[in-house]
Image (cartoon, rainbow, N blue to C red):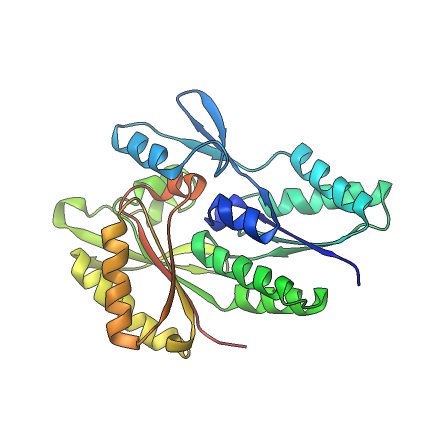
Length: 286
């Protein structure tokens, strides 16, 4: 059976150890701070980004260069392996579009290139859960078709619910329209957002973090399917205590036993900012 190679970019907010232990090829996004260029996950950690933002710095990010994709896809073609690249949402980055363009170029030289690129329409740990499931299936000797089908299904049914301390971060980075970046800091207004067709969409404004968390739980109950049987993803903008508090609330309400919790990565964190808190789950199970 032809060997299958799995690829993911760093916007999935999984740690470097995951890629190493599961033999998944990491394609890092670029992060810029203090006039220096870093490779997300590889040469900068999220704590540096969040500390930098708190001190007034404005980090920038960019998608991987076409040259990075060309090298990775050419190596795949030469190896005669089958490749599956699950990509960051095309509505939030040009990463997917660039990968598709380069795939077409590599195909001209290597017509036998066997590479499927999936637009996850997901971000952060929501995207990470899709990748984790694909890696587990790969270890269990699933076929290419089974992994692709499951990854597309999970991508289409992955819910993202999150709150940020300041919507300005998302607006400045172009991840949210300026018209959507309503200001409410003085009134302790906390925005609740979700992802719709890969885009960040503000849902509601609530007063105080406690009400936001309760509303998150209510929406989980309304949208989730068999939450107690899922691995629920949680990520945070350098506030592990808030993430663990949310985990406890979800455990109490829904009897969930399996969680995946991680700090938001440097690339996504550059736009979301400190204090971001998000939960990810499936609204329909296969």
